[in-house]
Length: 357
Image (cartoon, rainbow, N blue to C red):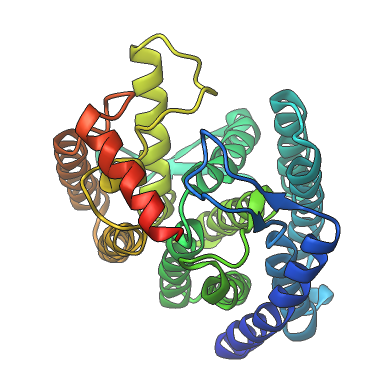
């Protein structure tokens, strides 16, 4: 099997080199993210950064892992390619939500057809596993589509999605190595390297955005790798580890759904209740907000790694305690409210202006 460090470094190097090329291409075809009411950026920024992430991941995998690794890898690459194309078209032409959802379902089905499907989940009352049977494929599609969108929804601040995804990927990489899942480790190493190679250009002030092409791709790859890891892992915690590793985007998305449902607003309608909006409203700058969320992601990643060492009961108990702590923390900063308070809106606006001068 390929050396994980080599895959990581190759993906990092290729992405770092290609990102300025993609940025120039995006400028030439006027693929830019313009300021708007729903945007934090107050200047136009080139989009399509996901192309650089995709090429870094793809080339590293092809050069160091190879296509002879089985149907799973082929399915991942085909699905990832479909997702990137879907994201590029959405970045350029603003596809309808139904079209995007259908494309994501098709990409998820590519994995299911290739045999990548969730077959077991941890037993909530003790050791052992629950066999899902015919429920496995639809649950797999739901999982992949859900995670694909969670990364996209958190991509609202310079460097946020790339940094959080990097931390999540490194967590899954550590767990994969610990469990001896070398194929999974090689794939996730390519994801982590691509995220890190892109981050210097995306951290505030961002020179390029990853766009839906990047956010959807990263979410899809993390979801696919977590399913493969659950399939091959002997640990009973299965999907609890990736849920914690991707805790920030998952919980932020869950809170957004509950918040909008409670206030009678469409789930697809944007608001100012996301974690990064709340932190900006408290007076933190864009850089500080991103770093705070990074720390939260590292904490959840460390918890995920610890959970992987525990038995089912203790692992679930730790997850519940962590969940309660997150609920309390999010309630304290007002994440369950749809709109920012008046003073929060002022601070939010000032923060944007200061960071975009």
